[in-house]
Length: 219
Image 1 (spheres, rainbow, N blue to C red):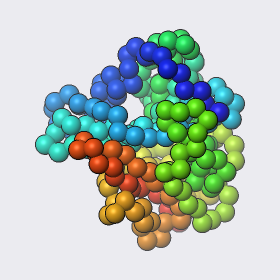
Image 2: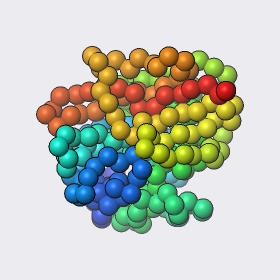
Image 3: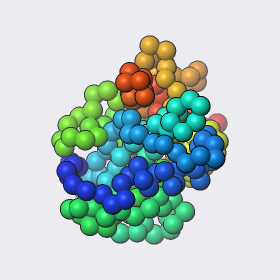
């Protein structure tokens, strides 16, 4: 169970993401610095209790229209070997000390727990409350087993988002740019075999729902 500490972070997560987001191939902002606000998300538990796992939604209001992004993050008490390319930045946590924040799609602990969430072996946890299930996060899966243990999945980042390849060849497309679904529904695209969906807050205060990730079968 992840413990949510009410303490300080220097720099804050939003400050780290303001510097990091423009370097991503799926970031759609212009030349202006992002103007980010937290818009939602959820957490997953690391079974070993060592790594913080958060799926954060942030909304960028710098452009002509606000854009919401899904940013999976992991927080570690020491650098992750071989993941320098995925480092978002470091923070000083008021309770835990120095924390290394990573793009979680490149962190094997997050990837393993994301497979477990899709299969229904774990439950999504509330973003800001300790020991509370987030019942607004949806998931589905129709297929054989994915991955039960920590493993590094091949990762591809492009203008459409991030792709993770499961051991059986299935591909999970993580939607970095979030698009509200009609009536908040998260209907699967034709041929998909699994998904993760959720809700987030729009700048006008209304709530939107849609797909966070979609699993497609291997060829």
